[in-house]
Length: 376
Image 1 (cartoon, rainbow, N blue to C red):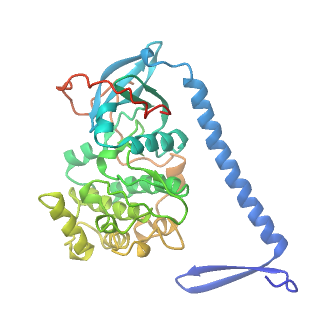
Image 2 (image 1 turned 180 degrees about the vertical axis):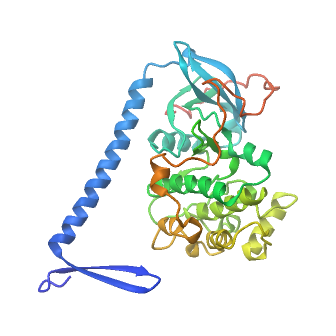
Image 3 (image 1 turned 135 degrees about the vertical axis):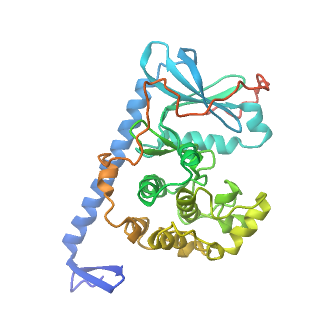
């Protein structure tokens, strides 16, 4: 800020100490200008891509979709594999949610938030939403189909993953979190069931029912998530932010490496008590390497502000951790890095990588005409 020196100082923390770079003010302003240009170009590309999707699916109606089979069953309904009647060259996932059940469980705001966040998202590591529909009984989300199946199914069949396989899938989640957190969006529902493999073997985040856009520097107090993955500050109702996602990332790493999450009790309350005892009370199996163990413990710190990813260096601190030494991040981003598991998918309607599901025993839900979903 010294006018006579006309310099700008950039201070960078590093393990070796503090480095001070002195540059002239014009150069500094040019750097900032370049960063703004890159950021705007990136945002413009995202907006442009979403506009293309809107135009492509603008005329598509619910009646144009043909159900092929069921891909999954959730709390509010089912996810069906569908095709457009006039186009057999590709397929989609159609998420159906019972409106009356959403109202009964008071999840209206979560559903509207899910639609808003997914409508704007444009990342190779997040399942794309193409269009939404509604009728008297259901809300529908037409999404990208990922026919490689759930990561949970593969983990169940294999028991656990090795270091390299876990590293690849964890890196995919880190990229998804980088995209979301840079937009102040907290995900809050990380688990293997919400990670789908596309036909190339890359992982994408799905199910944004608990995701929320936060105001910068603010916290949220909603208690939500899968018990084994819930951060201690959520349990203690102290308010939470994106740091809760880094806790869940550590839990995911442990589960992928061992087959079970580190915090598991006979019921949710016992699970929460184990979580509150902390990661240091957990015995790590020998197959978890020293670097993997160190990263998990840095992600699962009791104090949210101490978690790796949440500190000054941001999510890049996770990417620079020793466990990721030699990992080809650019290859992951441009999808040139070979995945550890290449799923077998014979066609655009091949559902062999998914479990079989019976028909809904409850039958059609009651109508809901209250109008809470007018903007869906």
